Length: 378
Image 1 (tube, rainbow, N blue to C red):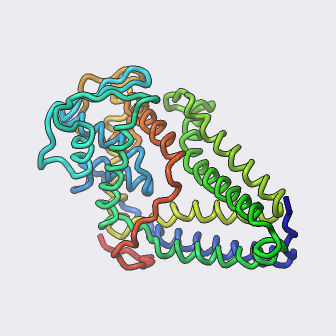
Image 2: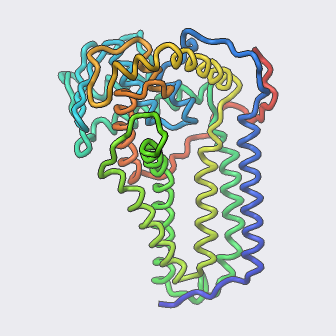
Image 3: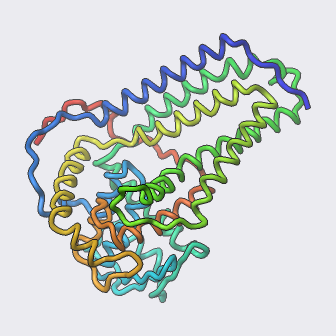
């Protein structure tokens, strides 16, 4: 198999400087989108912000991630007595108590309608059988994403696409300067190199998506940690498997082409994946909602945190849930059964996402692309 000759070192230096410029651009935009003047006066809220459901609250706090949002929505449905949750180890049973009505927010209605079609009142899932739950999650994710990006958060996908296109422009001279690629290199070698890039990139992106969940679990076993220890399971091996697959793909690519090209491609990929999440930033209304949620979280932490953690012990599903239990899970206040349940949902979803398409690029939102640095509205 023919190996392509490497590109000149000068082109690599230019490419790294180009990627550094894009990284600085992404960082500056991310900071600008989130920066707001510090306010010294903070008023405690005794109720959640109007129109903000537990699912929306978690979505905003997690900067666009939906796993905790989905768990908070299920707990909220149980607190409102639309369904009943029974958990024994990794096996969870959901029983429908009431049909959805106009009082439920759209994302919670989507969950009930999908999990319990006509004639079905009970659903049990675990790590090996959760197809309907994951399908419901995808339906829920679309619903809550539409709701939040309509006013509280913007994806700024146009800005991200500009950076992505510039990254490709930076890489293009190196690829075509390598003797053998696109010229004398056999089609078999060319296709094989393309497959290695595909395998390495998709595995690398998937690994970046699932490592945060494992690191969150590992943090609970560190000395001095006050939160309940979250048990490890077989799904926690997925980040290592994906990382190994990505490393294998990039190593083979470096053998076939160049180590410097493989490292450059990995750096560009990591930068664009991280920046994709960085571009999910709250709007002016979203920043106000986050400030109100932080004030409400302080109230829950002071008044209900210790009591909920004593009553809702891990491994034992509570008989009844309180009206704000969904918000306690969404805001990370409840560290007992609620956190254990959220972790169970997180494990199932991340295991499924490891093998799903890495990035779902939505259509650019209709909101203008603005860097609102001075939001002084009360």
